[in-house]
Structures are given as structure tokens and as C-alpha cells.
Amino acid sequence: MTTSVKAVLSSRPDGQPKESDFKFVEEELAELEEGQVLLKVEHLSIDAFIRTMLDGPQGLHGTMDLDVPVMALGVGRVVDSRSEELNQGDAVFGPMGAQTHVIYPANMLRKLDETDVPARTYLGALGMTTGLTAYAGMICCGKVEEGDTVVVSAAAGAVGVMACQLAKMAGARVIGIAGGDEKCEFLKSEIGCDDAVDYKSGDLNEKLKAACPDGINVFFDNVGGAVLNAALDNIAKCARVVICGAISQYNDMEHVTGPSLYLRIPERNASMIGFTVDHYADQFEKMEQEITAGIKDGRIKVPEHIEEGIESFPGALIKLMTGGHMGKLLVAP
Image 1 (cartoon, rainbow, N blue to C red):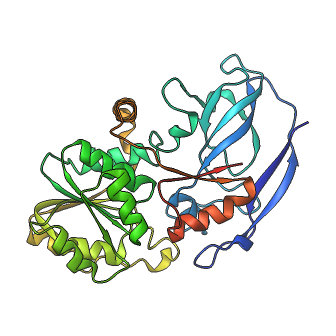
Image 2: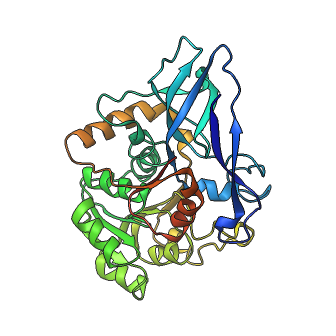
Image 3: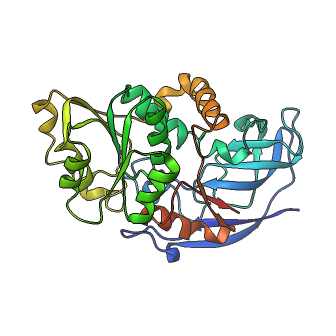
């Protein structure tokens, strides 16, 4: 018998999640049935959509029940198999949940090719919620072109660093918005941004004016709220504003604050589009191929922040919401 340790939601958060909103339980897993595999969860992806699912029925991405493992995408390793599709030692991707071990039907998992990248890269640079999301937003929606001035909010986060690098690969001038000198320096020295703006150190609107004197051609937004407003005040004629996320709003989804400067869109003949990555599933293979090529030739870096142990899961989610990391945030149970 295998024991799995699970991080479950014990109470719905009131605003910012707290570690006391979660608890840990142990469960003895059943014997494998035909077509099933036993997995050791290796890495869990800490994503903003998890926070929205902790609320009740109003959750932006649906809701999760109390006292069940918190929803999280992850990669795992097959420990035992009763399936012809997967063998012991295979790496797989799927909805692992916040737990150390899990039994799933083999046909609901994706076998991963580890020839060029480690399995956890399919949560980061090649992850649906990270690299593929950045590609869908920057390339498919933002239609970034050589010579564009591109601004990315939450640029030091997982999606942000990928969006910045994809824009650079397209020949754009890229400015990242982040919080603090350390993150801004990281964006310039490690990610290749042409400039970085610290939203914590003064008037963001004026800082964007200085960094983008001819206006913003593509704004890739992960934050919403005041950051979105400042960007809208600085868009160029025919700009494309891409709404990927709004992490500033997720702790109070009943009182979402929209942009008061949205009239800059018609004033400047600009456009605003929101998206979810699953609408571009028919292009995932192409996205993965291009991103993998960028990783192999060094144009794309894959910064990671890994927290160890399933007990670190609640703290990692809080870290995501408070900006306490750079790059892709993972938990290794």
C-alpha cells in the first residue's frame, strides 16, 4: 500500500489566503485496477487560477470542494502500471493535485518527451498555463512585430518572463513592469528586457511615459487595476492591449475594479482583447516546437523557483499572490 499526503482546502479564504485555510491529510491508496497507473508527483505548478478556484461558486475558473486535494497541474513519474500505455519510470503531465502520490487512468495523462528538456519544463516554458499562455497572448493576440514597443506587467513572474522573451525573439523593444530593484535588474540582466519599471517606487504613469516616449504598441497585462490604467494612458495609436490575467483582483472577485481609462482605446484607435489559452489548442504543437528551439539555442531562459515538500504548497500559493518569487514557481512534493 502507498500513502499519499494531500494538501486540502479546509476553509474558503477571506481575501488573501492564509496557511490556516489549508490542512494536510494522509490517505492509503487503493490497489491498482486495469488501465491505471500509480504516480509519484514530482513537481506542481503554482498558478494564479488556483487562487480563483478557492472561492465559492463565483470563482473565475470554477470552484473546488473543501477537504479534497487542491487543484494543481503537475508532472509525475510512473511508479507502478496496469496499463499498456505507460510503463514504470515514464514521466507524465496531468491534473496531479496537491499531493505526493495519486492513481489515475493512464488515458487521462500525457506521456512526456524528456529528450531535450526535463519533465518540469512542461509546467514552465512549455506549460499550458505559462509558456503556451505567453505565446497565445503575445504572438496570437498581441501580434507583436519587429520594432514594436512592448510592455509586460508582472514581468518577473512565470508568464511574464516568457512573454518578454517571446517579444524579444520577434524583434520588439521590451519593457517589463515589476516590483523592486532586484526584479527589475533580473529582467534586464537575465531575461533580456531593454528596460524595466518599478511600479513600487513612484508614479508608474510617468515612469512609463519616460520609458515609452512614442507610446506602447503592445501591452501584455497580468495585473489589472492601477497598472492597467497607467498603461492605457500611454498606449500608441493602433496599440494592442492583451488581457491575460488580473492578479491584483483575485482576492476580492466580488468587487473587481475595472480600468477607468478605457476610453483611451477608442481615442487612439486601439484594441483590447482577452483570451484563455485553451482556445489556441490547435496551435500547441507549433508553440512547443518554437519554444523548445528557443530554449536549445539559448534565446529563451527558464528561471525557476522551487519550494520543497508538500507542506510548502500553501505558502507557495501565498508567495505567488504577493510577488515573492521570480520565474516559474513550483512545488516539489
